[in-house]
Image (cartoon, rainbow, N blue to C red):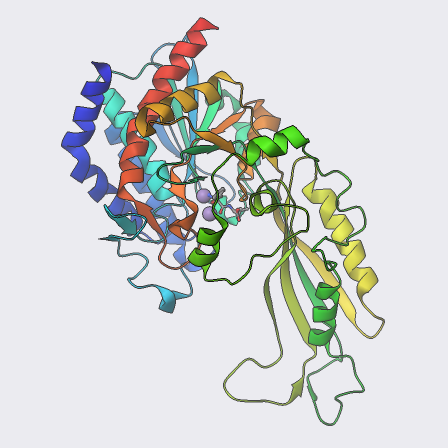
Length: 466
Ligand code: BES
Ligand code: MN
Ligand code: MN
């Protein structure tokens, strides 16, 4: 009965739910680019207004040292459980722009092989405006159909894509506002339309920037070449020495705290469907690559990594310029797994990087934002509620998986509020998050809006039984 009412409301308001999301996607809320400051703030304002319209109380834009957090709540009965919904309204930069088939901030709906019923193409469609907005519309649906079964608080931030540097402090300062029983987040992926899954772990992140300095100025590569260290060559050599032929990272102590999974745990994770041929085909690669002794899913789920994200220096313009550059730079990030600490890994990285640099160059090592890895429980009321909800809408029990990405605030929620999160994501890895042509399936969007009220229902019922 209840769920019919909910589904009817969603069906009747389907088009508006979509057009409102499209409007939100038109604002380029790129947190990394200071030129977009007014857009990011405009998006916070829009999210605030949408929450008010949906029926939330005490909606406010809470300032932080960076971009604000949008807060809103509906407390129907202090004795009932409270779900805290977290999401982010900021997006990644859209570049390289020329690789987009349609402009990143002019959302359009197109059909794809994976999304035959259509997907919205725009930066942020999946990560995370589309997934965050499902919660606003699910809330509106529960309000309008008189079926909100417990309390809810929204906490939608604007700095996730730049590391949530000010959110830890926000949580500490607003503990009273954030009283609740669980954090519900839709900002991850599922395995596939027919293989629903719930991430029960996320990797951490340690992000470094290095500079290698050779001679005090750029030199003629003929006059000096061969007699002076070339910092780009040296940087390449150092990077090459960071892994062995088995793709094992060679930083001393790097693996000391890595959680080794038992045979049973690995067998459990291996139950998730994964087709290596499809994987290679979708990325147009002839062969996979990674740490010896681990499957592809393990390489992204339970093993740490070290990757160069960008490297520059010397002449990169048109044609040829014979130059021996004075400086070389690289951004190097490491994904971390449970028990590794971003701070400790940063120190180990710096020590090792310096030890590999010859006396012919000077090096500088700096650390960017980081985040700690997390595992979330699979036996909690919240996990069971999410599992039941997804089973109802997808017709299948979701498979627990480990996500390879990072959401730094999840570890902070646990540390500061003692609250665990449920990662009920509805995107697909193939939705091109952070890439050109990011998209989000319409089926995923609407299924998410249907699944969220079911989570609330089951979470409330299971909490009452406890
Ligand atoms: N939503 C992603 C994280 C994600 C995506 C987790 C898919 C699991 C599956 C989030 O917005 C993100 O991109 N996080 C950054 C970290 C941040 C510190 C920049 C990341 O993982 O690179
Ligand atoms: Mn995200
Ligand atoms: Mn992201």
